[in-house]
Image (cartoon, rainbow, N blue to C red; front, top):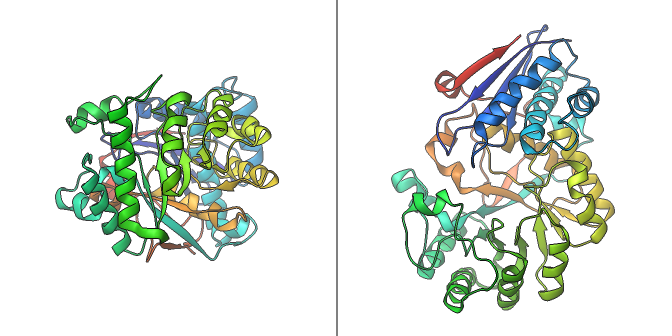
Length: 401
């Protein structure tokens, strides 16, 4: 089997502007992959990088996933430590190859990775500072929440669907209300050096409201999006200890892993990070320092299925749990489910509230969502998902042959 062409797609919009590829072969089997940079400010770069790397794999056998991954890693100069734009394009190509392998063998990818160790996947309702179903489906948009009472209500909304775990960023919305675009444009309310008392009080009140709404049986994940530095993260972590936090995600940026030691020495919350760490080499020091309790590799950014499975296996050696970061489109979600089904150190799946938007629901040929807080593993051949004709018709398209 040979790769004959790769169609590269860039969707429209900051939310839902997915970067995807469709890989075609001489046997008429096609596979889909995703570069997970639809949000933030790198989608055009990832779109271009997918085109650059597509030229390098035309004529190769998609069954040779290790060979292709090493080719893009070793023979492109920037593959060795080139950053997320490079590894996201590698992820798109790798995932498409796995999708083709599964379709050719008429097997779901999890079978090719060794089979299920998890028959169903517990999920949490993610990013509740932007609302949940009642608020989102009302205007088909995300809404930034400020008042602790709104955090109480949105937790109740998620729990009514069967979720027993939620994730909230109590820092993203500043103390004083501003326009959604203004706050989102700076990636949230960033606090460094010292935590002013009124800001700390409001952050804690939001989590306290979530705990009150959920009672003792709710697991709460606190997400920070790296908005704090190590000093303010440690202060907030200490203040949140009474609220029994499941884990403290991205308390600060992961560029200097030693800063996680600083936080861990000053608060008892389990720590997590990973969406901005790429490949095995990006996680190595965290494992050796044993500063993380949970890793969160983003399959669509860290090199695809091939590399993510290796990262998860490394984590198991250090007794570190895995929650794959899922903030992309339907291809990234489907691929994550296939890997999560196989890994013994799986902890929980991220169900992002953006999946409640119409644009997300219509982007794939299938719409997967948890039932009563749990995902069933797709049993279709390959990753079990393709981009919809509606999405591909309206997206920017470049074909590499």
